[in-house]
Image (tube, rainbow, N blue to C red; front, top):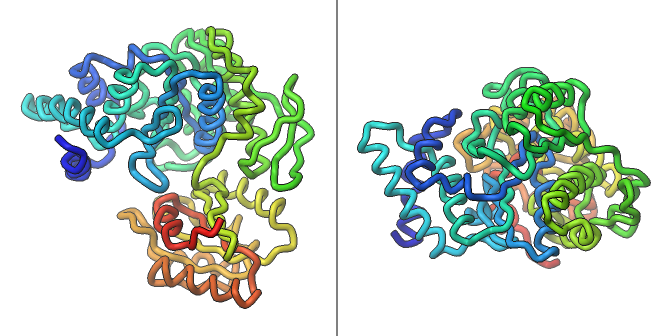
Length: 426
């Protein structure tokens, strides 16, 4: 298959939806020669902070001269973001070549009367095939959802398991309490393999400690960063022996994500990877699209993928730090299966005005329904029929000096489209 045929194929198998469980992915990987067992992997789960923590680890490895593969889905702006090599998206010809191999095994499974793999299972297998062919020194693999039954949870051993902060999200699949969700996330902990856990609630941390003890997995709980401050648009802080750390990735929470990343790098150092000497350089260079990302200066426009209460709290804290005494306009679009009411409760009071939209996603909540919810927390809210209309409404307010900045959040699914609408004047 060529690239177009490969993309048509992955689109066509969307009928198989999303299925939690490992039977199908394990069968697919077995038919591909179990490439995952030949990779040196860092496996990352968690509700919030996965992307930033992974970005810091990835950049440290790149700066240290290692060949680094990363798998993270879904994409924010363009599809090929989900699989990268040394920070660059997978090439179309590589994608097509690997997809051809994976499709053959999927077809054989279907002919044998087995369940056809889902799109996420197919993409996961493709990533492992690609990383093995490219002879990666380390691969960073983010869970799609959950942990125990996520399609990425197929490693016999890992360099390190990582669990970032857990909050209430995907509750219809993962559980209704922090402890229940933490138990699912803890499913990525591998027997006798190190695990790093970010600072978080005692309830969640207790679950991870218990599971690590059962699996005889050495566990490290990241400590709190110190001397955290914002100066000249940069976040400055210290962590243990690392003084004068700085990152351009905004948000106080990045200090905590960095602390988790440093503990992972320490474990990699113990495994023979010389990475700690490049921590400072990596933090300065690390970036992550769709996380409080400034995409335009006129009008000043920020995009953020905050879509659950935990992320909304972090976003609120960041807004209050970086936009003190500023008048903000929000674009908000959400998926119906999220706790959007709590997100609205956290964020809506900060806005001068809000426009709700319907993301282009089959799980999207209608803009008018979201508008009704948001109105409970901010009466200056309207719904728009399109993202273009929403942006133009707020741009007009910006041009008239009624607001100082536009912040779009609620779901990653529409940020790519908005970035294409916003003038690129940075």
